[in-house]
Length: 461
Image (cartoon, one colour):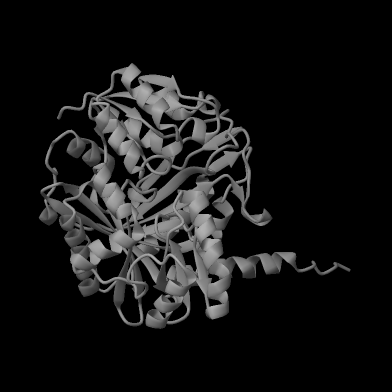
């Protein structure tokens, strides 16, 4: 492997994860940081750190020139983008290579192709992967959108062609909704992604969100089974599981095979995720998109397969073939990940930055906490509120849920409000324990919880 040193072009818990994975491979690490992140945990763990600008992300973590300059000055061989920020920016991947460095991820052309949701649908169709009924390609006007609806029918989802993370999405129930939401979605997509292009997808009622982890080295392609990601708020994942507990064996086989077929179609290199909607009633699945990076929820896949996905990314980027074959990948047990955010669920998930006065991390078999925290750390208010991911594993899903409740009770983060109470309530909920939920379940569940909290308390005589 040619990578002897790498620069981590990210922050927070994923930066810590990358630094630790690289060190385990004997690789020197250089951590970039904004002025607001000079004391973050990844800076303390890395061999070297470089200040790349002011707190605002666009002037630091999203500043391609600053990141490349830091990599050159530090004399690294490679750059790992993590997730978010520049991780799916094809121009950044190209700039890293143009600087004579290795980008730890797919080539810029692959990111560009798969990052365009319309082009990705076309790739999926060529690979024989079923796609959600919708527009044949981009729709650039309201008249084209009306034509698309005539093919797919209502309700229809208006989505950003270059989008991700749930932004730029509107749902239209009829033509009046379509006329109203179409320009709004285009404007939001343009502001968020610099591209106002849209496409249409049929809304799948009570769909489950299932995704497949893929790995490739450009010649060999495998899957590491699937994850269940249906518990979402505002189309943002809240907790994830591996494997998807209600997926029939024959559907799992077809689903995972389709993800590998797509990876093979584009000669994929690195770690990626192929996302689907699954209709439990019809037992049909539909391609949504490809994320050309490591996912937030990758630890649950690692827990049930024993594969270190971040290390595998680094090895492949360094020119090594995949270290595992498909027949080597086996499922063992069940894993659940809870995203622990600095947000107050009781106050509408208001962000809650502050100083961590006390931190107690639960320990024991099958418990893992990927985090950016330490006692005395002050959480800056400029970035995503994710503090860490509590991940648990057990032989069965029921045992996993029990272990999760115990681990959540043992996790102490004093000084800031967090989403731990939300996860404790979910882990105890009968519907969640039965696996009886879908992508819109959590928002309805939260509405009921907040409605109960808003009711006046009965007076005590």
